[in-house]
Amino acid sequence: MTFDDKKGLQIALEEAKKGYEEGGIPIGAALISSDGTVLGRGHNLRIQKGSATLHGETSALENAGRLPGKVYKDCTMYTTLSPCHMCTGAVLLYGIKRVVMGENANFVGAEHVLKSEGVEIVNLDDAECKALMKKFIDERPEEWNEDIGE
Image 1 (cartoon, rainbow, N blue to C red):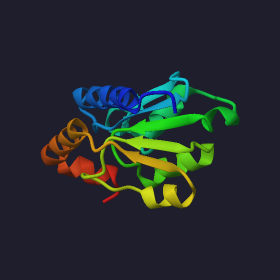
Image 2: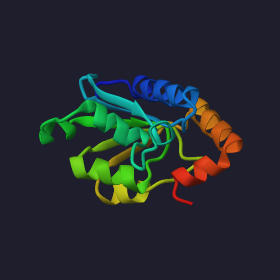
Image 3: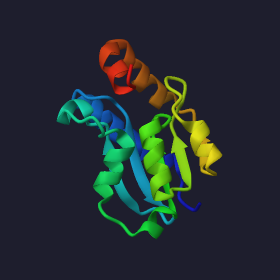
C-alpha cells in the first residue's frame, strides 16, 4: 500500500468529529484506493437521518457512489472504530481486502469474520479515536447501545 494509513485514518476521524458536532454518533470512515484517491467518505448518520443503516462505513460506501466491482478490491476502508457485523458484511460484499481501524477498545465488532475471510486488519490504536468514542458513550449511553443493537 502506497497511501499513508495515518492520513487515511485522519480523514475518517474528521468525519467522526463532524458527526459528533451534528449531534450524532462519532464514527467516521473513508474508502481510499491504493494510489490515495478518496473514493468516498462519510460518518454515522443514524441519529441525524433517522436511519437504521447509515453507519460510518456504509455512509462512505454510499458517498462513493456506484463503482465497478474491481475498484473495491484495490481499496482500504479506513474507520475510526472496529466494524460491526453490518459494516463487515459490506466490506465482504464488495471484496475490500483491507480495513484500517482507529481503535477497538470501546467496541470490538466482527474483526474475526473479516480475518476468517482473508481481509487484512490493521488497528492503529489511536488515542484520539478512543477518547472521542469514550466521550460519546459516557455522554449518551442509550444512543450508543441503540447503535450497536442493545
